[in-house]
Length: 137
Image 1 (cartoon, one colour):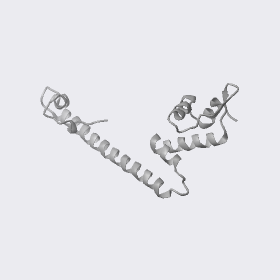
Image 2 (cartoon, one colour; image 1 turned 60 degrees about the vertical axis):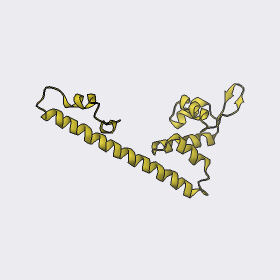
Image 3 (cartoon, helix red, strand yellow; image 1 turned 45 degrees about the horizontal axis):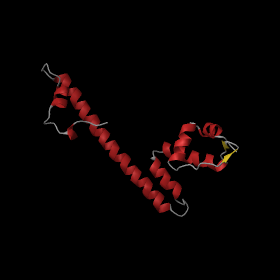
Image 4 (cartoon, helix red, strand yellow; image 1 turned 45 degrees about the vertical axis):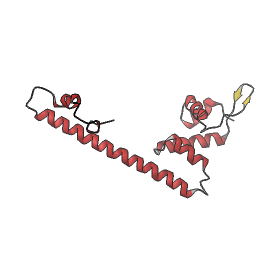
C-alpha cells in the first residue's frame, strides 16, 4: 500500500498530477483509511501507463479512451485512436513547416530590404494581410 507521496515518487510525477488525474477520471480515488488514502500496485501500473502514453504523444482524452477499452478485444479501436493521433501530429508538423518557411522569408525580406521600415512589422501591421499569412505558434 502506497501513500500519494510514495506513489508519485515511484511513478516520477507530482502528487498534484495524481490529484488532477483523479479529478478528470483517469485514476480512481482510493477510499480513506484512518485519514490516509492508500494506493495499490494496480494504481501505480495505471499511472505508469498514463505516463508512457503521454510520452508517446497521446493526449489525456485519448489515454482515457484507451484505458476504457479492453486492449485484447479492441485492437481495431486502439489502432484507430493511434492513427487519428498520428494524423493530428502530421497536420501540426505541416503547420510548423509553414511557420518556419514564413518566418525564414520574413528574415530574408528584412535582410535584403532597402527601405528604412522593417518589412516584418509592415506585414504584421497591414490589414490587407490575411491571418493565414501570419504564422501561428
